[in-house]
Length: 375
Image 1 (cartoon, rainbow, N blue to C red):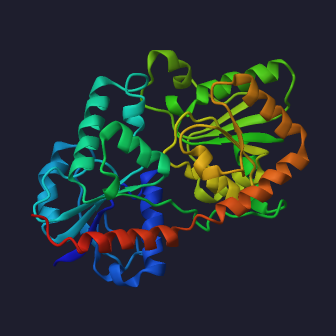
Image 2 (cartoon, rainbow, N blue to C red; image 1 turned 45 degrees about the vertical axis):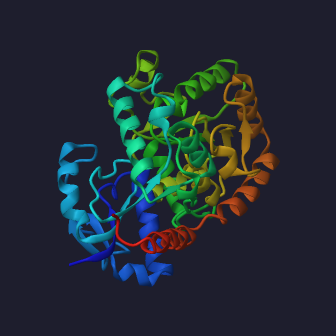
C-alpha cells in the first residue's frame, strides 16, 4: 500500500521527540483530516486507546542511530511520497521519496567538546550535515534552531521553516485543594514549599550548577524550600560532572527519576516555581507546560528560551550565579511576584497549540508534494 506521507514514529514513547510526535499526530487528527487518511506511522502499532489508534501503522523496529535503520529505510520509503524524519537520523538513501526532517536542536554539536564523546560528536556532525543537505524541507522548532543550522551547517534558508511546538491540554491549572496534589506530595515525601526542575539530568541542563546554588542558599539560611528534581540521569557523565552520577534524595533535595503524567501536572501546580537553568534549548517545551499549569518560571536567558518564554518568565544571565540565587530568594518570599508570573505564563502558554503545529506541518508537506518525485 502506498502513502502520501510516512512518518518515523519509533521514538513515540520516549520523552522529547516522543512528545513532539504525540502532539503532531494528535494535531493532525483534529485539524487536517486530508493528510490523516494518507499518512502512515512507521514504528510500533499504536494502542487501541491512543488518540491516533485508527492511523495506518507499519512495523519499523530498527534501533535509532544504527546501521540497521539505514538498511531498512529503503524498504519503508518506497511506499511513501514523503518521508518525515522527526530527528536528524535521516535515511542516507531516499530514492524517489522526498524528505522532510524536523531538527529540534544541535546540542550534540554545540557542546561536542564539552559534554560528548568524540564518537557522539562525529555521528551528530555527519548526520546533521546529511539532513541539511538531503532534506527538501527542514522544520526547525525555533528561530534559534534555524539560526544555528544556518551558522554551523550552512543550511539553505529557503528550505527551512520555523514551526513551534504546542502544549497539550493535559497540562492545565488545578484547584489548590485538588486531591491529586496532596496525594503526590504524600507519595514522594514533599512536605512543604518546593522549587521544581523537570528534564533529563544532562550536563548542558546545568542541574549541577542549580544543586550547588541551592545548597549554598540553604547553608546561608536564605531559603526554606525543598528542591524537587524530576528526570533520569545519564548513563555516564564527563569527569567534571560525576557528582550528578551520585545524586540521591536527601533532606533538602528530592530526586524522582520518573513520574506519571498526572503526577507531573500536580507537581507543576504545587511548585513555587519551575527552575530551568539550562544553558541551551532548541525549544524548551517544559517551560510552557509549567506555564499552562500556572507555575511561575525561572530560567536562563540562553538559546531559544527568551524566544519561547517571552516576558512570561523570570530570566537571568546563565553565567551569573548570584543573579539566579537572588531570583530564587525573591520567588520564595514574594507571592505577588509569583502571581504576576502565573498570569503572564498562562497567557504565553495559550499561544502554542499542537493544532497549529500540525496545520503548518501539513503546509510544508504540500510544498514538498508540489516538487514532484525526487530525481
